[in-house]
Image (tube, rainbow, N blue to C red; front, side, top):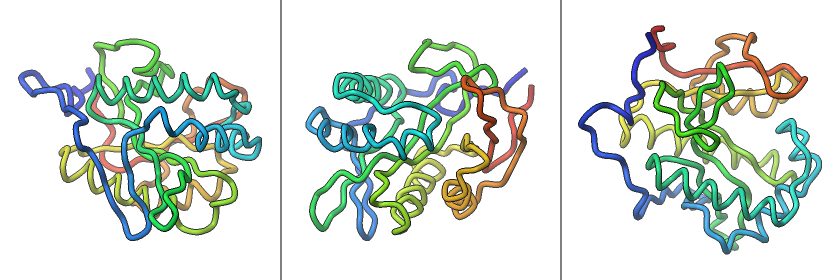
Amino acid sequence: MRTRHPLRQPGREALRPRDVRLETERLVLRLPDRDDLDGYAEVFGDPKVMKSLGSEPKTREETMTWIERKRWHWERYGIGLFSLIRKSDERLLGRAGFLMWDPERWISAMRADLEGELETEIGWTLGSEHWGHGYATEAAVACRDWALGELGLTRLVSVIAPGNIASIRVAEKIGETFEREDLPAPFPQRVDLYSLGNRPAR
């Protein structure tokens, strides 16, 4: 039997995303907004970015659908992905934050209103021109601290392709370690699971 996710404990009020905003030295992390379309269209239209995610570039219509679904995730679960805004010029650099899902079966809370047990994945994606400047680590640290501190979570996971060395380094910098490589994937390439905290009992 898997342990129940901390955000779904009986009697615990659902978290609401009102006024959720994180700040770092260089970044503001806030909820995705429809006005972010141009910024996300640039990120998700970049073949290099989407290759790192095992996917194809998105159209503007697909990107807007993605924004709406991520806003729904925040409303439903009180946790989700943040837009990363650079303070110096207010430019959207990418996203970082959380998704709740069952990685064993690749069933996302976005695709099914699961009543079973979910993992909390922490992830990050930046436009390729912003790679190598430490933004992903800066955002991931802020997200980790918020999840462990404010939300009281005790476990986070990241799903990373073995060739994505940059993301593996970010995962290691926030305290995640390699857990296993036998995670099934919805696409041909292999993916590995990195984690912070103990694996739930089954």
